Length: 140
Image (tube, rainbow, N blue to C red; front, side, top):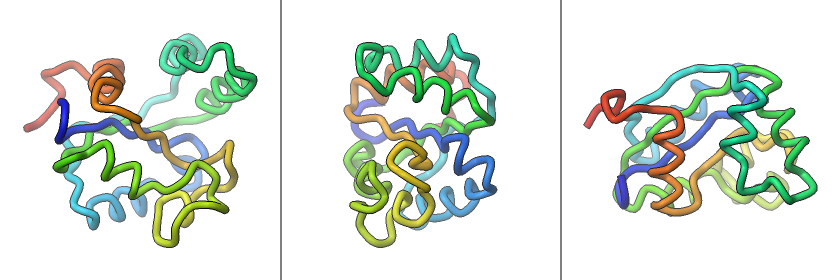
């Protein structure tokens, strides 16, 4: 997956507010191709495992609660230099600081309810994609 694939999750706030289609359209307009996608409702255990890297941070419990509050949509996206390109497309974590035209500027409610997750490295993109998808789920 390194290089041209990354993982994103349309979070419960955006998915529940019927913003998923707009977000996918924005990402496709930026040159991403969806290679795998599913809609699911994370359990506390799944969300806790996925965000385990943040376990010692003060926002961990709130993040797990938020990610289990409704359906979300994990996706594997393809584009050259995918991790960097996606992080550019989604904007800063705080939508007040996000650039115009980015996912978070357009669709996020707040720093905590920020519409979308994006992997932060090629290694994490591979690990995170395997959390949600088997190799046989991926369409290349």
